[in-house]
Image (cartoon, rainbow, N blue to C red; front, side, top):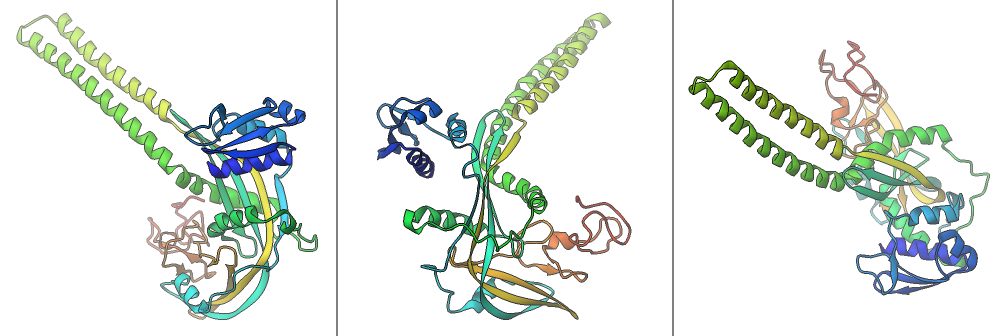
Length: 382
């Protein structure tokens, strides 16, 4: 929670409050009158952000209404930023760039050649989303998506180092807005398509611990439900068998059969209730977009497959100190090794160049996302 404490401290300071850190994981705030009204707080207050609170502190968490309070205070300020970084104090390229390329360019059916390494400027788009997952419990989280707009490559490794670097900048060294002559490479529709394609998988990954806990609780509840109704069924079946052996009339036997049917209906109704209880809904909201222009070392590469060639580039970022990773151009998987398709030399994972389930033809799902080009069988979700 220390990051959240830092964010809240920065916002309150910018709004004219006097803020001091107190332990454990808290801040002490002396707020001016406009800030008191905006956040519904007294002139002096303490806020706690960890499991253990300072004396007289109110708890502030992502799951509480404090995010709405602070959001209302900020309005649209800070929701979209465009900044530029220069090369000062950035790391230099490692002495063995070939080793970086060998680690990344792992392909089963093609070769590559490093043409050159040049200094360039590129633009990154960092999107920050707030996630709200609701099942039998509620969880709020923050998710970042980052991409290099020059080549459409995901830049996950850049997120944490970049945020740390920006937070470390002093007021006098703050980055400047980018020159308007450096035009945005991606338009709004292209960004929306990227988010639609990328975000669902990232949400599933981020919420997997929450989902696993929910499934464990649901499994325990279903086991208890099954054991309870199994006992009821055994008792009802035993009574039915006893009455048959005693030679009782059909009316008595019918009552026991109806009791068995009622137990079965109740069991399925309880299962349906559990499924509704543990069904998960996820909402996400874009809370900030950052367009960042900065210097990089650009690796220009030539991919060769049979007689065909394709030029691509990957950037080595001086903030993350890493070379960008390749991703499957269909499903965005980062599993290695990659395959290169014959038609357009797409870099794709093995599952995206698998045989058609109908005719057996192997084809590229990046080239043909909806159906097999040979038989037209629709076996892959678009």
